[in-house]
Figure (cartoon, one colour):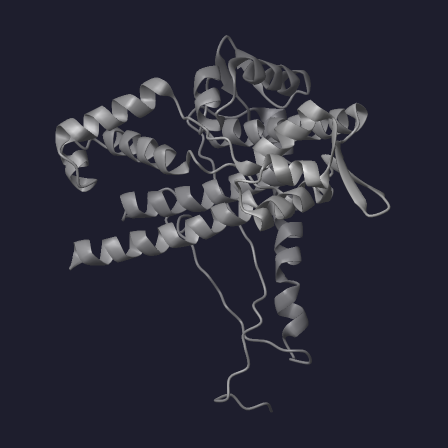
Length: 332
């Protein structure tokens, strides 16, 4: 029964996680390539099982494979690296980049073997995302890649976002060397070097040879800035809290009430006497925790951190769900 319940829980978590991945892959009109995801999940799961002391033969059985097949697949994927297939989105953009400008009929002819509605949708996404410009001359529609300075500005924003993401990964401890940072974020070696140089120059991280570390992570709160890093840090904190709670059933004797998580749900409506208090709670928590963090940081900067210090991680979020009206409910 215990195994059955765990399997059901894993299936439910995978479903929720894939929903998150799908949302991330299509954020702001993007169409991020996903061909590598299944292989990436297999490789990371195998590595995590090995890290937890699970024998390869047992891991192979957990995947429903014989040991030889499991080892062959793992060797193929880890030796060749993750192969990212070229999506139709990338193919159309690459073709437009080579041609500079093309009429709509030319694009549709070039990709006539692909679904016409999908090609049209991707062209619309490319225009909405700003990497392709649509021009009209009477009934004719043409497409051209955005100007070099526009693309340079976009590349600068992308590099800044990657630096924020690398900063979050280093701070959470998910990567502590150049090699693990490259592996965690799938960066090219030259890209890792450039990002790390930026972070060191900005005083956000420290580098000692290949070792990377930092003691604080506070993102710019302006709209659209560093959202990828914020999502990663929040998700990482949630997952690590659950993992530690599963792995350590007994609370830490030093901080007996410091670990765990709770979800609080409130049913409210316009005019409800507690509507304002409920919806303002996250802002209130943020102000209090921001003030507390500032005081802790100031003290630590002044007095230094003691060896073996503990890091307390608190994450918080909220959202409003508007359920469909139920006939069983009565409006007061």
